Length: 519
Image (cartoon, rainbow, N blue to C red; front, side):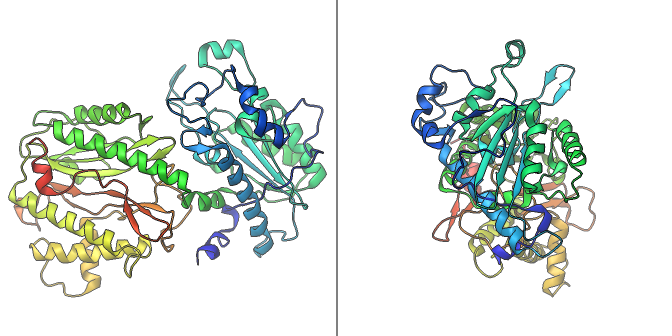
């Protein structure tokens, strides 16, 4: 079923392979390339890179973040090479098996993945840069305005090439160090590297020599100039080939986390769990939601997270009934519940946790009722994962709606007249109109091209996040429950032995423990 899906989503997926490297390069051109043989790259990289300056943290400059055998925090260079290899092999297999308008006889392919670019909040003031996740997944490069090109031919010879910003002392004075073309092959383990200005002639040369299928998705590109170059190149060589998107296949790979990725997920969830515990322990009536936002940001960074994974929801009182409330500007009052949905990014991987607690340290009776329903429901949903009713995320959602409808009926919030599962499911959905789960990884809503009807498999990470939201304006609900929002969310890994590991288990959620955090 899983494999059928990966090869079903035509123009959204791709894999190719990175086998033996030929001495003659299909990228040979008048442009000056920096090339390195695989053996030399492996044996002399440390010597070549010593005392050099790079456009990102590396083990030589940041040993407190990156181990000697890692390219980036937690991930070794060989893993990035293997990812590129697997992608190209899968892409070639996909084309051979696909019957929907693609030339199945094609054995030559070129995959082009762009980086992100800097974005500006005003004039010359940039936002914090975050790399395109697919680009980062395949090469570990954290620099903007960079392009990764991979190719495979009919002999399964695979080549990876990076097009980089060249060294520029004036630009680096203002913006920071660049890795540059000369160091890119050794640092990132690619076969060749060129300045960005050589992208067009090299691509044209490749297309004229091999006439490959081209895999590039302009819809997910941050580089408008690259989109224009792709159009110009195709026009220059008068290509009639359809551009295919490799993103679905990349997401299919990213969906299953490697052991190294799983360890990074454990770490980012541990950081967020400990940070949220400290925030819940320190909050008191009179703190503004903005103060609590600052607390979680500080506590995560204090534990070496890069930054928060997304703008957190810090919603007190009736604000919690707005599911994506991020204004975070109201003062908390004694008697309020605070719903905080927050996570952090560590080593390029994100956590996503929600906790709801009383700002004064004590749940009221109606708050206890709703909180106990949501917490019990979440525990039941976690227990049903991998079993009937929880083998896919969509099944888990259906199970949640039915169970929630039944629980709310028992406390008088849902009409007693509903006596069928469909009716209970609809009633539950009315009070929790968001999905109960999404995939989690490098992005918070990870691998969005992968549907939620796939059987859960080892290596997948997802959330479980039931909630109840009751507007203060509802007249069909007992008054004591109006204006209350409760959600409990944890991050779940399906382990290699097909069991459940709650990555955020260290984050307090038992009601009695929440009431005794300050004791």
